Length: 504
Image (cartoon, rainbow, N blue to C red; front, side, top):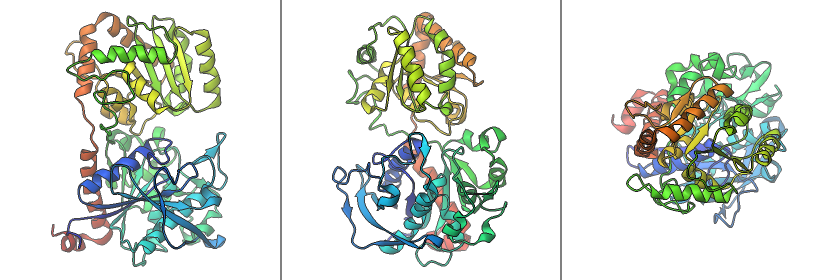
């Protein structure tokens, strides 16, 4: 029998590391449930079984029976369900097996174009997750949705599933990882949702004569949160709200910011199997060896006497790839080296490939994602560059701090929350910030970093030491989420129910 304070929690998301991941959303869904389970809660995760998810590699087992999913005007659709576990835990992960929707190479798109049926693919995910609760006889206290892909769950809980015996009383929390992507689709999607056309209005799911799934989630969820406090404030402004800022402001009293954590079992230079030499705040000699190894790995001259700047990122405008491109020639006029690892927009692949050819002793570029190389950049670079136009949380700046690699960041979102600007006089701070999103501001800040490297060794040492002292733990984040779940239950079912259930 469950203890009176144990919560039943269902995560529904489009990705979860290590099974399927394209960004920070996957990191959160792959980590947070494990730490909530350590607090004693019954946590389960539902994601699609994309064909990139290897059944044998993760020892997935097919559950008996077939899941029947009502898809409105389309009719009933069916899927199988595989069960696995988040690595290093007993947290169950349920994978929805549906070849028509998920039997393809990409998670969301192919050749830079989103799949034309993404609306049905993720409405199916949301409805199937609710129907799965019946198959499992699982009654979640809270259903935790993530971004637009599962944002329709709160409206469903308020309408067609309101009196469902398994999920009708479930509270809802919607985490906003990235407001730019909202799930805008043609009005006819209302017939698939099956919640009634009365919800297609400007006070509900309609925006600009389209169904906006994220808007519906924001309006209906019992509580909302973002992945940093700064981003929670930013999305209430026109610059960062992407047209939904007024809707978010209307729910400001129910909006919280919780900074993501870092898995220090994976990101720790004292134990990292991917890097050439281990090091710690007490003994930093290994970092110089890691720099040599990174230079050799990418074909650059092995020079200890110049600063090496590193980037591991998707090559898209949000990540500041455009201002790196604009500033890179001027940056490389300095006595520096620069490495980039990532992929994204095709123009960036060609552009930075040409830069590498033009500056073979100064610039190296790896197109694609390579986990081992990402670790090598964090350990081997002298500074890590993150000039994002907006950044809900960001994780690489946290990894960089742990590796004694001072991050150079634009002061936005989680970057502003997690990085303290360097004070040359007091020797405080752990990174270098700039505020204007421009090539000039980036160039100036990289120049400041280069000056520090060449002329202020005491300051560079302080930057590294200060960063390595910081910790952003999932344990702390899990406790904050636990409090939100309890508050969401009170909002959903009332304070009297909560006191009777939990004795508080």
